Length: 453
Ligand code: UDX
Image (cartoon, rainbow, N blue to C red; front, side):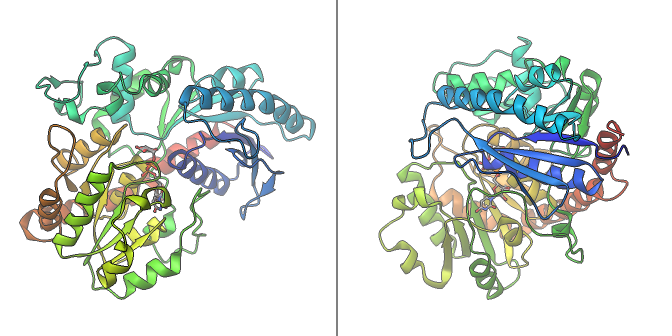
């Protein structure tokens, strides 16, 4: 490799994007590349080195003044982020060139496609990074090509959607923004725009692995220079004998690791339901109550992540009154939890990182998708990979307590549960294979690195 080969990595500022892209940086660093990871943040600060000497982190502003309230308007937020990056990035690239450390590529988040032209205008190769799987990006692609039209309503719609290499999809299996386009027109624009210039991109990276989306892989590779490099979970969690550092990149939240692990240590193997709906899902109050009651009536131990902003929806004194039956935390060390032997199943919103983590650790899942890519991820989880079940919603998208109780029972015990555990073990092995030396994702990462030799 050429001495000092150097790439810039720039994730969108959300946990579900920062986590996989910063983990990807570690894989690149372990293969000898130098990395500058640019984090768009509320708190810009001077550059610093991570525990990996070859990764430098540069936190830059998201365009809001210190203390200024962050806008809820996505268009405004995206515009500020874009302006801030366009102001800072050229100068950073020039400085890197002057210091004898010129970057050769910009790896940028797919939600910021305009970064391709920025990369090219400074002589860098543009590598787009999709943090979501092909099973959703290809649906967005069909929309951009006009081969699928966005339906006007979500529920009460009996039509099925058919895409090449997909199982038939019901309307509520589609990425939500397609079916709720009138509620989230600006988010729909962002997700569709991800594909707007993909035909001009030099390298297309995706946090998935070949076997997981085998049927789609041939098709996407016939269109674009695709490299699947996932799952981006640290390999030490797949093989606890490894001594790689446990830091899973940059977290916007803090977890009390000891509290969770000690609590789990006190429970029997496979006895706990782990509940987490990721970093963004906001539940309606009545849905939160159904979950409270569903978990209680399931009679199982549970470890439940309820972010601070969601806590006010819990019944008064709930945390104290739950006693030994449940531990409620604001944020968990999710990888430590999912790899703990006491965890018997994962009630998840089916965010892509959580899905990959559940699959990689062989944890049976109960999908309770909320929006975005989650319904489509849930469909594949239940019907294609067969590693869990999806809760049934009523016509208003509401999940009743009885359904939660039924699904917890189904996955934690009985014949279906056994079948799911067997499949989950198989996917765990395949995920491990993909990122091990000589596995499909490891080969893809080597290929990426060799482009800069
Ligand atoms: C968002 C979208 O909601 C999701 O649909 C999309 O696929 C990615 O971006 P998010 O909702 O945060 O992400 O979910 P997810 O993709 O699952 O990412 C959450 C990450 O936070 C995971 O890596 C998970 O391990 C971590 N996490 C979550 C914790 O470490 N502790 C927690 O308590 C909860």
